[in-house]
Image (tube, rainbow, N blue to C red; front, side):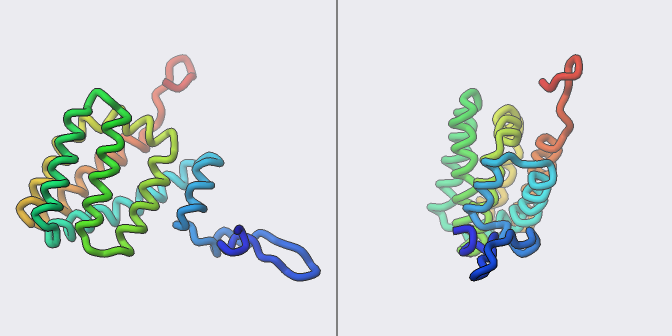
Length: 186
């Protein structure tokens, strides 16, 4: 499996070697999952978040231009569900994942949808990010409403701008240094 994914190179009669990381398909879903299970470092988290910051605003813009009435209704339902689960961190996170997945479906770009689902799963697979998002998502609900309103009005630039603001807030929250009490993380 590792050879098929380009991580190992198998040479007859000489053995195997690990290929340089620069040659790996870093957005392969299995590879991302393995990296997250093995423990992520700040660079991986930062790189994934930066990729999302580039892609998610454009996805919101595409969704605003292309979403059907049924897709908008589903986005509204999921946004409402996020609001009703503000006290249930697990349910809130699941509704958030579903909302982003439906937004990417509304883009009508299967490559973008697949790539972003993979990246999002990797991000949410990290304990650090999950823990921080569980506590912060309720305060981001108005920003999600702003994105949804722009999509509802089929206003692509407004949806992109609203998602950029939302991701800036999320990124600042996720990447902020841990607060410490007596030298221990809280």
